[in-house]
Length: 78
Image (tube, rainbow, N blue to C red; front, side, top):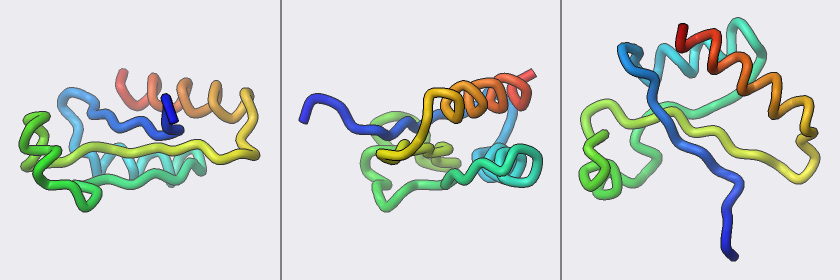
């Protein structure tokens, strides 16, 4: 497999748990904040203390849902 339908990110100035909460409560988008059972990977990335926000796509996600998610992340980042 060349690609996996997972993205992990942080927004400067916001904790991953805050971003995940906002995605869920304001936009109805499920995500997972934290270390994702991979503390050594986060140590290598420099995100060990706070972790990241993780989003993943499923087979039935639509392009419109992806666009809505990108717009939600952009609004939270502003």
